[in-house]
Length: 323
Ligand SMILES: [Zn+2]
Image (cartoon, rainbow, N blue to C red; front, top):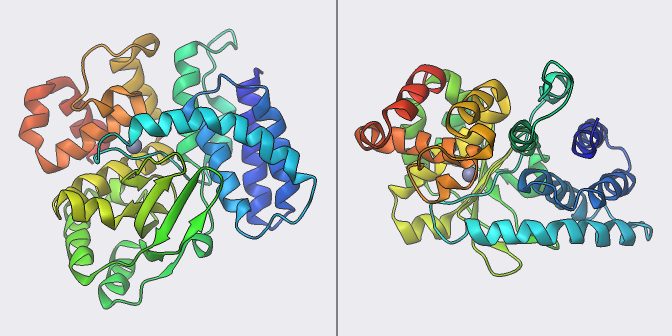
């Protein structure tokens, strides 16, 4: 078991403890001590640590011993900020964050070949999957929208609609936002067009006014559970942009729930971590997870453009994701 896999297991343990109300500072301390040993960890792992810091940083940290943990986490997350800078250059970009209860099963089988060793490419994909599978309690980041459209969406699709709270940690912050009736009507129209198995991977959506990296970046979305999206980004890019953003982030939730699909995508289009053919956007060239998210979003908003750009990716989505 290498360090990254140890870290993943500990993160999963921490996740289950967190849900039952265990001492968050102790958990974070364990996570960060291990994380300190993986300075070269991939962005998805750093996002995991970042997300736990977000979750634990909002009023839970009263223990002085946590200072060391914070410092260690900061070292890890300095790298994460570099990743965020790359991501925030384009409004179509969004971070991976959160979710899911299937993680232990994923861990048991992840990335092992016949001799029990991991290849570099499987590590990358497994890290992306772990990063996509983290969740934070909804009450920490938002409160349920009281608009009738939100109630209708929850009843029909099982998706909780949150008006985002203002929060800040060492690396990111968000300004409170609210869904409008018009945005929710558009959101509902997107949900109606999505295949059920794809749609059912998403449980919650929070609208923030603004999302910020503390180094000045302004991502349009933070993936995970709940997904967070920025109304500033939507206002800036136009209402139609929300469709792309929503489907992009939902693809990360699909990856969290269907890790084999991402593994197959990576094996086909990113053998040995190398992109064989360009993704549909520059941001899609970042890694297999963003590649899939960008291509699925394009498949939704402009399927013919996606098909012409890359018939193989188009067919993969049609057969393995859009069902
Ligand atoms: Zn993304």
